[in-house]
Amino acid sequence: MDLQRMPTDGTGKRSYCTPGGYMALMAEGMEESIIRTAKRDVERAKDLLSQHGVSKHELTMALAYLTQTMALTVDVAECRGERLDDMA
Image (cartoon, rainbow, N blue to C red; front, side, top):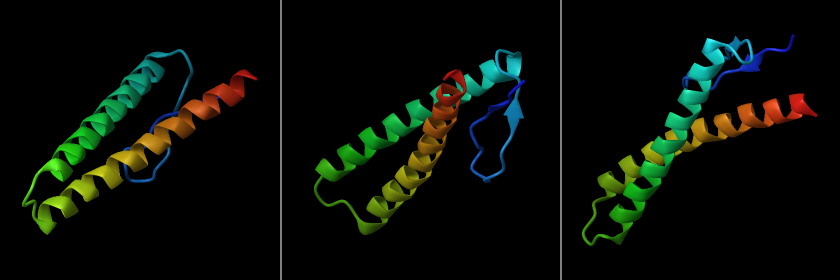
């Protein structure tokens, strides 16, 4: 039986679970949470960019959050792509 890769926790370490099991459901919940966070961070950055007088520090912090959440979101997309490949 093939294992399902879980989204990374940001450390780069990979973990796997049995498809259809409790851990797979938790992994899918983690994926949804990562995507929601990324969407929220994008909206916050857009709001920040529309404001006048935003400091370099504020923009740097926004970029740091976006970089982190986008990296996690790419990992989610890769996990989901792997599951699609397994279906073929």
